[in-house]
Length: 341
Image (spheres, rainbow, N blue to C red):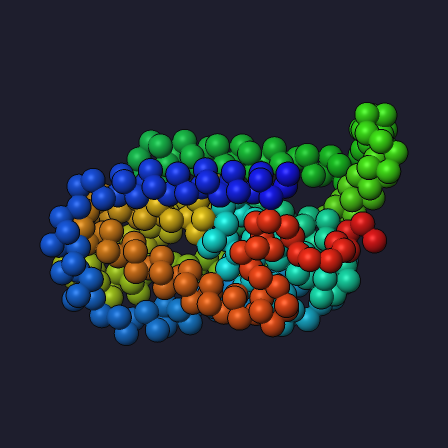
């Protein structure tokens, strides 16, 4: 039943990809697209790939601080789990890789998966607020289309609502127990007991950082991660010669970062194929870049950002003794899940 549900999500994700790719290709001059691909300086993508992995390493450092209230973990285990999770996101829809990386870490370090998932949720909340901060900065530099601003409002409202709910669950223990009491009446005793345990462990994952200066460190690491993302776009603009040809300012990479991240924040297609390409294309169109070269740019940047991570993730998954696609789509992993032990 679970496998069928995941396959349904995958099918829907593929349809989303096809829809947005159709939008991206509808006005493309294939001659221009091919010329752009041939004339690009691919040496720029060596540092681009290095920066992509650096951003994931910085994520591992930041995740360690978020996990500190549970247990201090080694950065190598966190980095490995992140790469496996991001690799799974390339082949699965709806951010299922986030669940997989939480499970990999729980398996390696014998921690409750639900508590680890709570830190991943906090990580995503930090990312969304960072993205919205960048959007506010970018609005003063270049006006966004109305639909981007509306998307920002929606993300802000949803993230603020989720954060409020998590704080309520953490601080209002009596309300949480009352809610769980209602759940116990509906569900069989064994399942209700498991829900009680999982909920308790999930809430325990939301804890304050150990020291006051850890908040500064997490903020600095978050800024560094987004600087890496911006550098990926900026170096790629130089690789395709767009900076000189279209006289693009430094802020274009910031606009690209903000708009394309909408495709990443919202769960959609496997590897964000389609939405990422289309959003990148329409963003460059704001600066007079033709559809063909813009789609070439989007395709190469996407490939440089995702496929090296996929290859390394497959290698790490094999080292951990798992099949990445099967374990992330059909079932979490073979064997017993630590959460219910």
